[in-house]
Image (cartoon, rainbow, N blue to C red):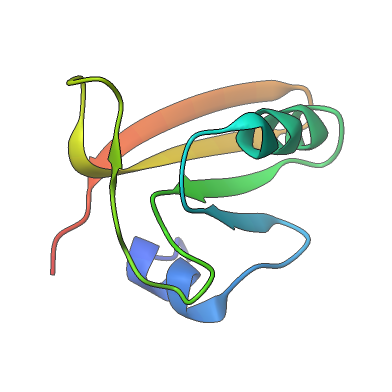
Amino acid sequence: MKKSIKQLISEGESQFLELKREFNEGVLKTISAFANTGGGTLLIGVSDKKEVIGIDLKGLVDRNIFIVKGKGRGLHYVINEFGN
């Protein structure tokens, strides 16, 4: 069963889930780690306190969560607006 973004956030970080407040070097390291292992889900725009704060990608996205999923050596991403 596929989990919603809200469910993922409520569960918090694990071996396969990372929450990042902003797009920074830590995000790139996480993407690399997921790409070189069994994969995982990265939610950018979520604080360590599990609060959706959103991100600004220089006008490309407003108040969105950027999700990167890796499975084995493949990556794909989804830009998804978080709605209540």
